[in-house]
Length: 210
Ligand code: FES
Image 1: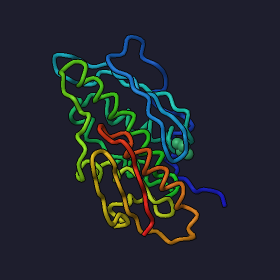
Image 2 (image 1 turned 30 degrees about the vertical axis):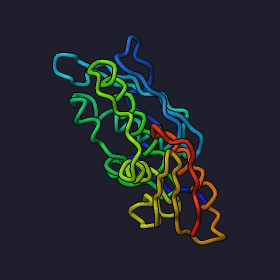
Image 3 (image 1 turned 90 degrees about the horizontal axis):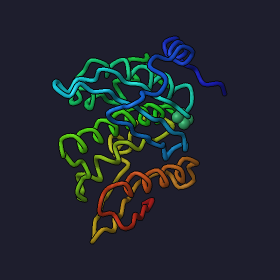
């Protein structure tokens, strides 16, 4: 079945804003999506006196939704302070585009993760703010808000699919409740593992469908 996009998604896909590379960028980060394996790289030029984003560009190796979201979030981020731009959410980006099909919501998560990761890199290098989070239930919960359930494009925490998070000396156990024969189970389990593995201190991740 063909995926339906809004006119705004198509417009930003066909004529994306802020595509390219910034030579001598103050920060640059590449993020990959566990959901589809695609990547985005975001470059930032920042006014060091005011912490405002003077310029931002991106390169996408993703799909139309990712390119459109990259286009819209770089528009939103330009001229903002790094703190303001870091607060841009994938939901906000999708809303600005007039909505994305549920199975394509993860593409906007990827674009926002790319921007956020570049900002955090800058903060770490220039200001010594270390965002490598500590391992606790709250951090795992926050990370799982980036894992979407494809049929509806909503995160698994909001959908109350996560029933339990347990941590024992770096071993993380996540219990989810998903129909047993659902075709989205395996990709979602893999996505949970990839996301949680990124947290500092995680030694293993075990996901059970209960
Ligand atoms: Fe990979 Fe959209 S399917 S970014």
